[in-house]
Length: 147
Ligand code: GTP
Ligand code: MG
Image 1: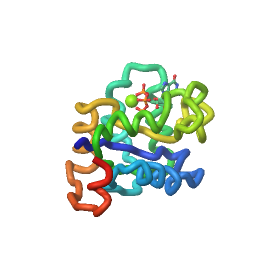
Image 2: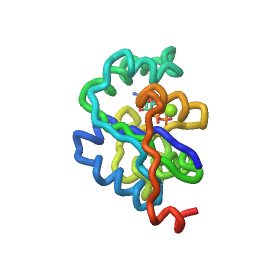
Image 3: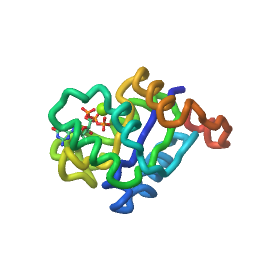
Image 4: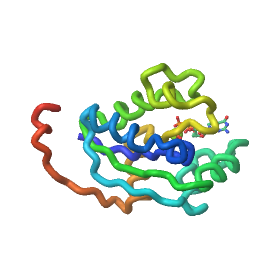
């Protein structure tokens, strides 16, 4: 069982897509193990996207992610990291397949609705960074029908 960090970006929150996005992950069978709405401090935005700090769009990315609240969550389930990434679609919504979150709701790479951890290492780093590693372990009756 894996945990992954997923965040609805400011454009997704502003467009009223939080419920729709959580619903997709719930119906898929991923379990919410933590979640919060927050205004992202500049320092957190810079740490989160540290791997992109030399890229030309880094400033734009930090400005965007701190421009309005985000909805951050931790999801748990079998292969949760790749399952969530596949449900999000390709980074650029122009290339994301219909049926994916970015494919259905995104239009440009600068505002692509959602973030998800891209590896086990990223997931561990991001769950620590955004939630100080705090998650809630609980059983759901449906768990036995999922794995
Ligand atoms: P995240 O889940 O947000 O990390 O997206 P990703 O893993 O699919 O893509 P990546 O980590 O390569 O890029 C991080 C984010 O930077 C993307 O989601 C985009 O929002 C943004 N980004 C990437 N490339 C560009 C670009 O060329 N221009 C702009 N404005 N933003 C970009
Ligand atoms: Mg990324």
